[in-house]
Length: 592
Image (cartoon, rainbow, N blue to C red):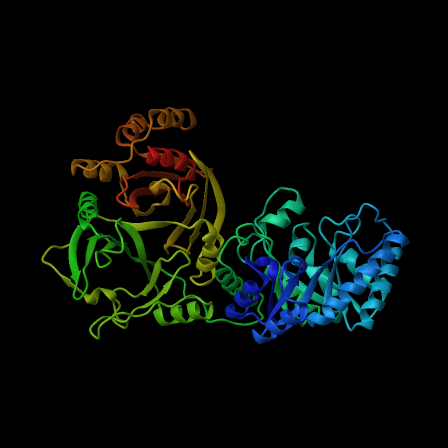
């Protein structure tokens, strides 16, 4: 289906927005009136620029407070409409959005609303324009799509139809199945937006917190199926009001928007994509550093052994049990601090994983490899992390481990796996990253968690694969310009006995993050422990959480090296979370 985007979704000037939409691959745009008013270009120049970019102007919007008003006011509205219709003629736009009135002078009279919209449609038809009437969720008297349709149906004019907006429908909890009762040819336009589920004034919710389909909590795909069942064959158009999008790079936002529509079409059964190959585990976490000594000392204390070195690059492989960490010093001169730069994900079909990523517009990374290197498919996540699709030790597929020459040392047999990876995101890429990992990698998102940080609000959202597949935690830290610890990323290792693991770690001379005594006093008040259990946690710096089903989570953190730290975790009783209740204590300790 044709894909369109409203200029209000993007940052910049109108020219910059049109360029970003075109480069992303959109075929049409909605021109938001404020963008046109602020442009120095004449309507004819905007029309020419849009055509040169391969775009069509699918909608001009909005016209407000038109219907169900006193006759004197409606006469002024018709005068305004004549000017707008002439403007649209110069732009080459043939459909205008009319929002349900919020005017204080509007009256609750459907017959009057229908009669005035019919007269507006008469005027529009003379200019070759269609009127798409939309129910605002906060409309004074018309706030639901079915009410708007009853008025359009009563007006009975060929140039008058309805516009359906997923936010206005789903934010009010309306049943979208009734959309199928509207004739498809009377649905003149479809606007799509998602939003996080929030309890707040719907106007403020709409103006500041909309997001692209797949980034929020609405069933936008279900709504789309109903609209298509009604017979709608027009464009799928994004209309998103979002404070972050208004400040982010327009090109990236447009690309993210198109990715959301591709995934939405797949979810709604409209257009298939290469099937997702859900990762089955983490092959390795790769650290980039210009000084490998501090992280090497920390890994040694954690029980890791340096077992191999890449045959052609300055990359060492450290192993313990099934957990693998690569330390890459090949970026020396470009980095000064240790950072978590790449993740290898186990997949049953690396080539199929790469095909899906490409279909969803994920940037593929150049293969700077020699002829002797194992071919690996890799893409860039929105935060710049390299994601490599791996098949470790499978005879039918190349294994990335074949690029490493093993030393005489063997890895510790201690049972250790990577439980999860926590990736701190740039503030303006958080929602983009959630959509990327959800659609490209096939991970399922958990609910967003917001936590108190000593210097602001810490936002977090986990995504996971079924069963024992990988878990990723995307964090959005406050104070992006301050506090290296809040920008740090970490790797969490799962252990069978966290007390024994911490004792070994401390015996090796390494230190854990110091946890205040007040924390343990509070644990004593909240939970019952076996005799001596809490005292052990207090002594070793182990944190504890328990869910409503009795599942338990024990974990602790190392000190930070550069922008990386590590975590030991022990899960029992089906605990599936990440100890979110303890995050404020951890953040405060890292700040100290």
